[in-house]
Each structure stands twice: as C-alpha cells, then as structure tokens.
Image (cartoon, rainbow, N blue to C red; front, top):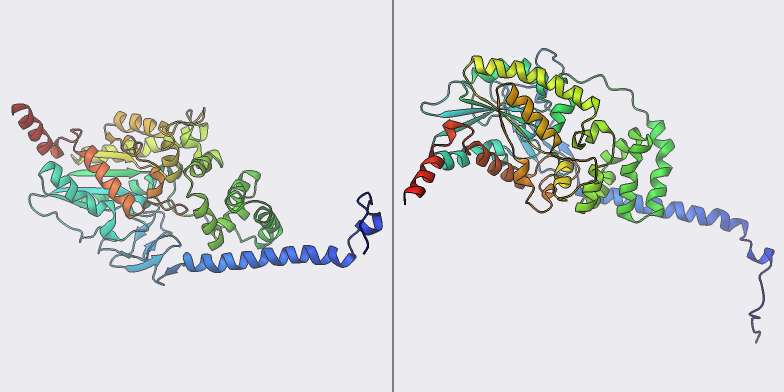
Length: 414
C-alpha cells in the first residue's frame, strides 16, 4: 500500500486542470444558472399571471381632456399582483358605481377627483375607499352621504383642470382631490409621449450582469443588486427585468423585509424619490409651482360655484416604508411634500387634510400596498377610508361635523 507523503507538493503539471474541465465547468455553471432561471420563471408566471379583456376602456390620446373613460364600457384585467378586477364605466365615462346626473334629494354629494389611487386601480369597485367612505362618513356625521368618483388613471392635475366642468356638472357639495407624489411628479401630463423603439439588443448585452448577481449573491441580495443597477445607468435593462415575472417574484421576496423596503425607498433618482428630501430639489420646486397654478385655477372655479375644495396627499409605498422606520437618515423627511402641499392649498383658499399622521403608528404600513405595483390592496383601501372619514369629520368641514359636535356637547353635559 502506498502512503502519501505529506510533504509532497503538487507540481505545476499535476495542479493544472485538463482543457476539457476548463470547458465543462463553466458550461455546467451556465446550465445550472439557466435551469434555475427557467424554473424560477416558470413558477413566477404561474404565481403572477397577467390577463385582460381585449376591450379598451379608456381613451388616452385626446389632448383636450387627457385620459378619460369610454362611456358604458366594461373591461377586466389581472395584473401580476392584483386579483381579477372588472372596470365598469357609466354613461359619462366614470367608474362611479352609479349613474351620472342630478343628486338625490337631501343627499350630501362628494365628487372625488384624482388619479389611479382614487380610481381604485387593482381592487374591485366594492372594496375601494371611494365605495367604503360614504358609510363611514354617515356613521360619524349623521348625514346621508354619496360619493361620485371621477378619478381616472393618469388623472393628474393638468388633466383634472381640463375636465373640471364634468366635476361641477355632478352638483357636488364638496370636491375631494386625492393626490399622490406621482400627481406632483407628473403634474403637466395630459397625453403620453410617443414611446421610443424597443432596444432588445441593449437588454441582451447587459443580461450577463443580472446573471452574475443571481449566481454570486444570495437571492434577496441579488434582487437588491438588480434593483440598484438603475443607479448605474441601466434604466432600460432594469425596467425590462423588473417588469418580467421573475423580476416581480424577486422584488416581492425583497420587499417582504421592512428594512429592505425602506432602503429601496432611498434609492433611485431625484425624479423618483426627491419628494422625500428634507429640502426639495429645484426640479421638485418647479413641479410644485406648476401644481400651484393648477390648484389656483381649480380652486377659483370651485369657489365660483360655491363648492369647498378639499385636498389630501396619500403616500406611496416607499414613503410609507420610510414613515414606518420612525427615524430616517439625515437629509430625508417623508413629510416634506405634505407640508409644501398644505401651504399651497390653504394659501389658495382650499382645505387640506392630513392622513400621513394616521399611517405612522401602524407597524410596517407599506404591507397594505402591493409590493411592486405600488397601489393599495383591499386592506389598504379600508385603512384609507377610515383615515379619510376621521379627518373629514374632525371639524375642518362644518357640514360633516354635526354628530361629532353633538356627541362632544352631550359628553360635557353628563
């Protein structure tokens, strides 16, 4: 029996791999990555299927109105994270849950305007806060309340101004303007710009960076690395990957972590997250000045009609994640945009209500939004309805505080 000499050092010839190993080992690695990727994509496509009806329910190319609904249209869609949702429009092209026209006698009608959050994107109409809010207001105010929903996907401030005659036509007693940071970011949007041609070659040329991240890092860290590629100038590649079923799956795994959600909220360009800076950039200050102009016009028209205009800012998911940390890095303040909007709206004669303060005590409040899509879930809509009912009946709108005032007086008299 031959004993190995422990002092024996392999020679250069003994330590060199055969040529076939230099070929087979990388090939095996690539095949393994391919097999994992294929399996992940197979699972992702079944976890996050996408379906939609062929009928288009909105018109997006009319610069005189902005995006508007097709009268009496019905369509349905299922985005990767959302349930199958039906979108049904009345004869005026609104997802109002009722027919347009004169309001019923002795009814206090709220007409809601805004973009996709108010529209109820991604949830059934029966579960959105526009449907849930009237009953909560009735319980608190003792009045008969009706909410007519004119919010529309891409219903940003400039297009709201274009369609404001439709708002007044519904005889509102109050106009509720539901804003998000996206409404300010895209304040002047009316119709989409022509899309540039697809650059499939660019995506293919950079795919190896995605494969490298997945092959060399743990799954969640790889997802975060891929997310961070946007900061390196890979916006097109990242967008392609993030919109794919595999990208959505990885991002959902990543955003299960509150800390990673908060960290992700701080990544990206100023255009995406600059509204959470403690000092807004010149670009965001410009957007706020543009919003100020729209708010002045809309507010003046509402006052001329004798209708109070109430504005509220609903947070985006990243903003909620930062709120839920209780502390945030120097230079960041998720309340800053809310503060700026309050000053603008009240200076222009409107009423501003604050719901950010209501979200903050909730642990990990971002879990009430779809992780990647970013819109509120059904549970999120329940929260928003409760917060709006609380703030609308706190005395800032006299017509909605009757029962609260009576109960307070009765309590003091006992």
